[in-house]
Every structure is written in C-alpha cells, then in structure tokens.
Length: 572
Image: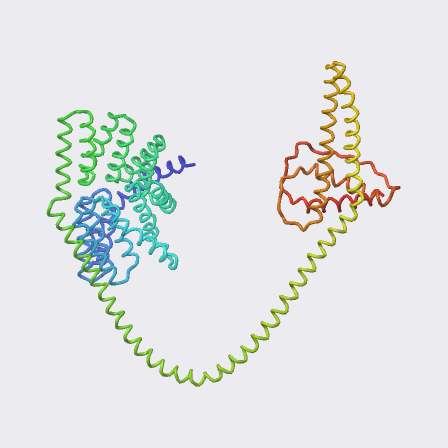
C-alpha cells in the first residue's frame, strides 16, 4: 500500500513539477501585460513562493517588488507576507541576521492587525531559521507555543484554504526536526508521524518528511528502512526541484553509509550533497557537507583532500557566522527583548489603569451593597434561625435512623449465627457418627497392635528375628492407619468449630474435593440419624487434577450442607 502511495506521489510530482514550470512561465508572462498594481502584487507574491525551493535569489527579488507595491498602498497584510517570503529566501542563502530581521518586521505588522495566520506563519519561520542556525532549543521556544496556539485557534475557526491547511503539518514537521536534532527520537517520531498524516497531500513536504523519517531510522540502526526513506526523499526532491532538500537527503544517506563502514559510498554521497548545495548557494548546507567530507578524509588519512574541505567548510562558516553577522544577531536579539519588555510594560500600565478604575467602581458598588445588605440582614438572621432549628430536627431524626440501622445489623448478625447453629444441630448426629467411626478404627487398631506387640516379644525371646520384623512392619502399618483416622477425627472437630464461629472472611488454600467429601458424609449421616429408614448410595467422581483454591471454608461448608441437604431430600 505504501509503495503504491509513493508511486502515485512520484507520478503526481512529475506532473506537478511540469505544471509548476508552466505556472511560473504563465505568471511571468502576465507581468509583461497591462495590469493594475494589486494584480501585479499578487502575481509577484505567487512567483516568490514558486521560487523559494529552487531559486532563492528570484524569491528575494519578487518579494522585494511585492513589498514595494504593498507599502505604497499601505496593504499591511501583504507587506507582512512579502517580508516573510523575502526572509525565507535569505534563510535559504544562509544570511540569518537579515532573515531574522525581516521576520521580526513581518511579525510586528501581523501583530498590529491581529492576523493570527500571519503571526503563526512568521513564528514558525523564525523557529525554522533558528533550527538551521543550530539553536534547536530556541527554535522550540518559538514552535511549541505557536503549535499550541494554532491548534486552539483552528478548533474555533473554519479554515479550509490551502495556506492554513499547509501551515499545520509544517509546524509539526519543524518541531519533529528539532527533537530529532536534540536526540529525542521518540518525540521526533511522534511529531513527524502527525505531520505526515496531516500533510500527505502536499508533495513539497513529503521529501522533507521522508528525509526526517530516514534520520529516525538511522538513529534506531534500521539500515534498510532508513535507506528506503532517504531514496524516496531524493527522488521526490528531484521531481519538484527542491535542491536544498536534495542536498540534505544526500548528506543523510552519506551518514547512513558511514555508520555501516561503507566509506566510499559515504564520501560519494557527501560530495553529491556538497555539489548540489554549492550550485544552489545554500551556504549552511555547504558548511555541513564540507565538515562531513573533511572528517571522512581525515579518517582516511588523506591530508590533501581533508585540508581542501577544511578550507571550504571554514570559508562557509566565515560567510555564515562572521563577526559582523554575530553582532547583528546579538543586536537583533537585544532589540527583540527590548520590544518584548516595552510590550510587557505597556500591558502592565494598562492593567494598572484597569485596576484603579475597577477599585473606584468597586468602592461605589460596595457603598450601595452595604445599604442593601443592612436591610437584608434581619431577614437573613430570621432565616438562619429557622434553618438552624430545622437542622437540629434533621440531626435528631438522622441519629434515630442510625440507631435503628445499628440494631437491625446486630439482629441480622444474630440471625445468621442462629442459622449456623441450627445447621450445626442438624449435622450433630452425622458428626458424632463420623467421629465414632474414626474412634472405632483407632480403638480396633490399638487393640490389634497390643496383641501383636505380645507376639513380637515372644518371637524375640525365641530368637526368631525375621518373624519379629514382619510383625513390626504390621504394627507400623497399623500405626499409620491410627494416625490417619485420628487426623480425620481432628478435621471433623475443627470443621464443626469453624462452622459454629462467626466467619472472619479469611481465605485459605483448600482441597475442594476433600471439603466436599467430608460435608457429603456429614450431611448423609445427619439425615440417617433422624430417619433410620433412609438409605442412599454415595457415588463421587472427583477431578484429581483440581488445584487448591483460596476460599472461606466456613462459608463454602454451609453452601455444601444446604446443597447436599436439598439433594438428600429430593432423593428421599
């Protein structure tokens, strides 16, 4: 199913890429016709978006032209969109200070007109820029609150347009990438799966998503899955002309081969990543690929090539993070913090004014309420006294009910105990019969042993040791039988005592076969004691494989007595 979906995506992206070229040519052709400024503005914004993947220079040029028109007519929302689009181009080129400066300008305009979509879009792009710069924690500080606010906003608003629908998976994708870069693989996978679910209809996002899935599988050491995702990412990126994502996917594939000790393949794909990044002027990707190649050739002890790529990476780093650009970044951070402090101060002043006016209004209300409360106090006191009296009556009735309930519970316990004693009385004859049987066995075997001991002495005196040993063995067997019947009598007495006591509810490991057999015999002999004419054949089929079970023996015993009593009554 997944292969079919990817094939459809590739086919769609092929036609989409062809359609995209036709759309770009058509839009550029329209600019050469007689159009009003509003129409030219919209076409320029469309062109800037069309070029943001493949040609950041053209993206910047058309964004600048669109901003000029929007500023001329004071179209604030269009100004914000143009500035944000322009900033995206500078981010792609690696000029982060200028990019962030433009994003801040766009954000202030969107905030001034309360454009939630614009605010969300710019905050997401700011987070993405800090991600590219390598400041992943700061990026999440922008992305996570923005994702939460946008989720809450779209629940209460109907946004069916493509721009709003596309923003949601991009936010989730950027959060997933930051968690991936921070090594939080499970969190990254969670957000990437959500992004893929929400954005599978946007072909330009799929390449990025598959590349990130590949990185997740690399972290989990799933080589085959990682290679499949990265191959899909490269094919998709090629089909839509996303050179930057193609470079990043090549670099991820290089990392995969390096992890699997395939150095030649690792160097090959790192070189491809560098070539694509250099052709597209993606300085950050040039830096990343250059550093990787330097490390690989350093591992191979190929010093000339290692030095070559070290110089290339150093040049890219100087371009991206020169001292002047670092100063600009620090300055932008300071200005933004100052702006936030000014906003916070203005909000605090507003809250202070609101509190003061609220205090004055509250005092007026308190004066009015004091008079109202004074008049109501007498009626309230009277009502309180009446309620207090009613409460005392209710408490008295409640105590009376509780006392009655306690008496009923005591009576119930007494009835249960009486029922137990009654059932014990019914079994008394059976118990006595069973105990007498066991005592008869004990007495008979004792008598036999006494006679056999006399014979044993005679044989010993005669020196007939072998015959004496035979007699001793018989005595020993009789003693075993005496012990068995004595324990059985003990079991019957203990069962009778337990039956007569109040149940503690304590469960004990019990052989249910033995328990059933004992109470069957007790019930039978109890009935026979009352009715000598009654006879029944007791046939049992016990399952010897039954394990012991935890039961309250007294309670189960009473159940068995009732069952057997009813059964004997039915037989009779």
